[in-house]
Image (cartoon, rainbow, N blue to C red; front, side, top):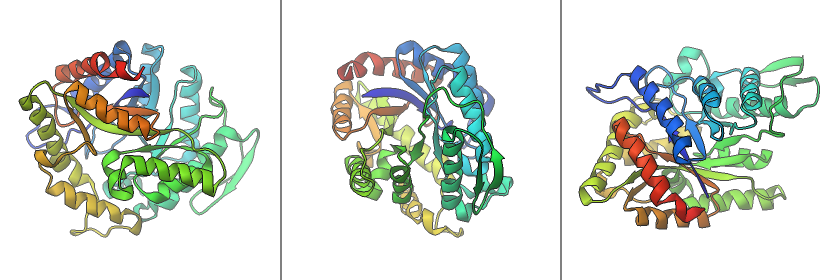
Length: 351
């Protein structure tokens, strides 16, 4: 099992002294550090308008990283596909894959914040359908050998050919799976999946059950083996009870100060049917306390405890875990120290 660096650039905290501009620079430095300490990949989130996160352009940061690294896999976490034209997305990420020597892991999702859709004049209530059609276009742009046309509900064009093609043949997308329809979309199209364990536990019962359902859907429903399954995890290595409490308190701060405001909720907002499961997530997170946190959401504790938990993740069939080190206003120096500790004390158990 491999490991990567992951961030959503969360910076929405009351009285936060850290500016978005300085945090962007910290994230870039941490991603460079990821290669130096031996992590496999850097997964950089996309958020707009200083809502949950402050990094609006994973492509720009990853392009800069491509020129400054030699081995690091380069991935958006994830491209908010419905607010971009899919042909443009296909062109840009194919170009990065070509120039980086085939180091792109392309991941896409539909997000969860109406406030990130409205300024772009995109229909949030139709996000599921818009996302599915958009990702089909991206995939065809990378795999069709010549000119092709498309006529759908949201996009229509004739006789286009997207060049350059990606270096990887194919550049198979990852679908962020917070819901069964997203997982089924990935299985139907022979694409990879990426899960958030706390959401997987709510929708499927556990991360292992989520991977099992994906495997069964691929094998039984579409008569082919499943593609690659990944997951993300919040992580904080702790040597003392005080350090463990710090890691959990930082996550509660992230949930309640940064994340909840970006989620659809049942109070005062019409929630599309495809987002109703998020209402349950919000209700749980509102009452979250450090002592309630479990391995379904966070890897927090001694290196051995984290190893034991990750061994279960590996046994479930997860090929790579991307690690959210810098959540909850953790200082930049602490984040780098945590990354190095993980690679020295945890990762060797999975070589």
